[in-house]
Image 1 (cartoon, rainbow, N blue to C red):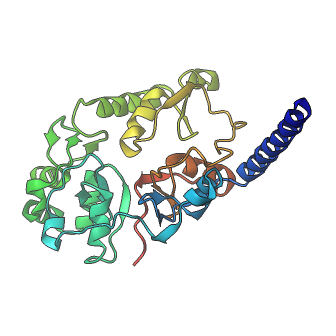
Image 2: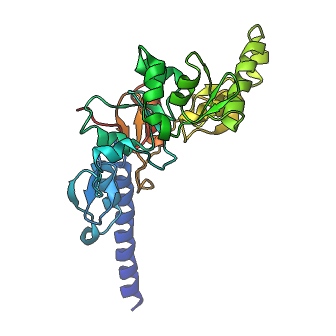
Image 3: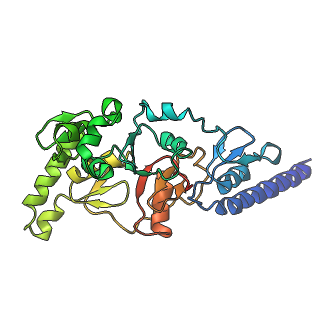
Length: 306
């Protein structure tokens, strides 16, 4: 009997050892594919790309593996009429379009692509007075005063006269030569940080390297900022940005995760190369391994070219 149990234990041990070695070998194949090319799985969930789905399937029994239903996101983008798209959208994901209009969500711009093929997103956060003035071109005051967006666009800006305006169109209509203080509403945290950053730039203009290094901080985008105020000022354009540590960023740390098994739900972002990435972390990985000087544009996937 003892001999039978010993043989049985040896067989079980051999099977477990094979499964562990097979799982480790399979896990090693789960290298990060940072690009967002969504597919809809048979479980009704959207996966960032086929490699992410394959990586998840490796750790599932064969009879429970998820199959590809179709390319693209499971939930189709529902677009309202053109008139509704021009109206206000309630959202905290405001973005600036290349036409000088600020939109409540990247999806609003994606839907408008069907009517305006040339529309795209410049950056996260509302358009500045300078960007709106440039888009209006000649007779910009008259156009700003007559623009319907002056009445409903919620993109608060602060002028150098320390007056808060509902949006750049209202500011240009009231004071055509006005300039903007960066950061949004006057005396809000972003605007105060931008003001302090400007003052610090002036005070450190002739400072030594050691004096300048005293204020340096490292951001979550693996970029070094001149001070915490500079980082906070930049946060209005990147919701994923926060301070990681004091001092310059260290370049010896690889931001790329080894496996994809923990990335189950994609949170896509758009990079400066006009390509969509599975997550903000994936974009950082791409900037480290694939393309240098790659930076974040806005949350959500990039708008495909028409």
